[in-house]
Amino acid sequence: MCDLGWAAGFIDGDGSIMLARGTGGRRVLYTVPTIAVQVRDYEAVKELQNILGGQINCGPHNGKEYWTWRVTCQEAADVAAILRPFLVLKADQAWLIQEAWAQMQAQKATVSGRGYEKPEEVTALREGYALAVSGLNTKD
Image (tube, rainbow, N blue to C red; front, side, top):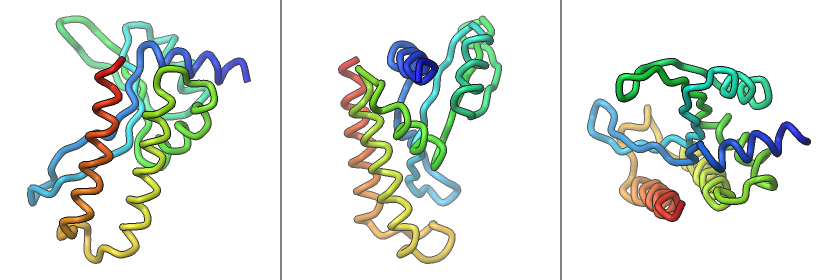
């Protein structure tokens, strides 16, 4: 329990909870629930990984080496559910990415093919979730 409180506080203070947006090969909007922390302290992100799983990557940012811890998709929704009771600043974002992921999974069952031809209402709903999370993130 103490570890989850620490992890939630770390993400509240230095992390991001978002729906990452982009386009695929055929210019189709996609949204990916993502929770990430980018810091210079490897030990901190390693502790997050020990508590919550996820991936760690290293890369330069503004000429300095940074470590990024990240979870996406189902793993992000699961981490959001676990941490939400402990989050203070980003509880609403956590709830939104959980809801968005649940909707995406429900829609996946009804959208045929490899996801390239999504109905307009599916794209609009996903964009709506992404804008809602983005709007909450600008308040921080």
